[in-house]
Image 1 (tube, rainbow, N blue to C red):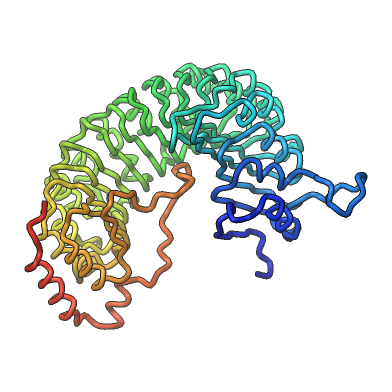
Image 2 (image 1 turned 45 degrees about the vertical axis):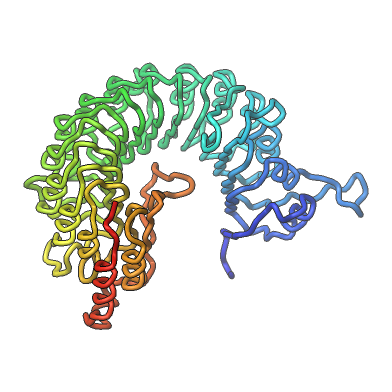
Length: 488
């Protein structure tokens, strides 16, 4: 495509012989600036970028640099290794954005792991602005066990101009290492640390004394953090994205500090120890700025948290709300949500045992502003494993309700005929019934303004164009309900 600088391809790299794969990329355009590969082995990356001698060249002739214009590189690999990091840092002279993620199947040996030496090689050309090194625990509980504070000190020495740093799985890095990043990288606006098992409140104790202007902060699975850390962090009043998922020791006082952030757009609090009273502190933030809120797995919350946030409010900005895995949330809470006409486009209430048909009926009947189409704002609705959902709810998932619904999560034990009839009557609707999460990005881009790409034809617009005569589909759904076995 003329003028294109980014390339997105879908093919199985394992089908390539390693030397053939490198040869193919030698033909890539010098104008290519961005490359993302869903999975590739670290050995293939190293061989691809290594300046090997070609078969017909003399030993003194070195192959020209592969991908000389690459500025952004995102790779998912088997292991992040010193050799791979060193080759990337040395060979890609224009690199400004490096995003590496691995998911080991077995505990890495030292030759297939990242060490302090590998970190020291990062940013050899001094142009790097964004660095992400994540060890995923998808297959194995594992960490970067060969990196400690010394490695972070060596890296920070070369990364003073860095604007974004994401580190996941650095279990031996202590407050000393993390504080070095905050005090060395004066341009840092995005900080993401996951599985920081030794990160404590002390990292943020004197953050107000720095010149940092953080806007995106993710501290996921950092279980030593308490309310004191969030109070200190809130001195960065420009924070727009705050991800505190699975920080189990955070409570209501953390929410009181968060409520002072005037520009907050995304707040993720999954699994924290907050109560309905604490949630009430967020009311002003919800009214003025918040676009996405996740309270998933906050076990102490009840229906009162819904009224505390939304009752009596109008013209809300909130578009995405996750209330999944709340054992005390019932239909009454969803009725309050519908009554307040919150213009939600994505609502997740999966694994809520007290949610049932009444919630679906309330949402289907909800009108936002002056829209005459019931439930018209909702594009994603996740009801997976909700305890009270029966065949009655599916009557309210038919036209003309939920005209913009694109994604629906339900329990797999529902009658297959009903689901098939629903799918045929609503061809733009994606139904998930095996418990899969809806709309989750591979790179878990929770520290950015992630929004679904609804580029399909709008179903509501199609109804308006085609008219509302859907008697055949209604009859098919009715027959499916009559013939359905009782739901579990």
